Image (cartoon, rainbow, N blue to C red; front, side):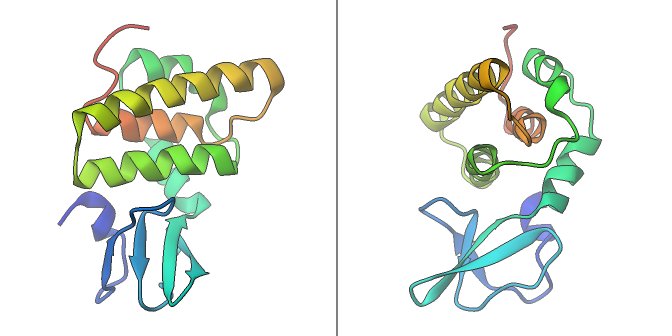
Length: 139
């Protein structure tokens, strides 16, 4: 069982989402770490703020996490939630090309947020990215 699945309630039957969520389920999942949204006859599970907070508690060492420290503690926005969901899915099934694409996407999002504001959840994205083996180089 992956660390992210360990946060699901006991007995929750989910599979990895091929879309924007982390998981899909036939029933809504009651959890402080996930929020369920209907999608056709399924439910998509997205990260709740508490899950972002869990990842922001750690202090992973890496150039990306250090550079995104300023975004720590800010409530997550939708764009960061999408990146965070991708990192969590990759923790279950790592794919080098998708990990590289996620690295670029997190850095692009951070640059945009530095120019225009926002960026809540980016530190959690970097922490999750570090856990899947990303951020192995200096920025």
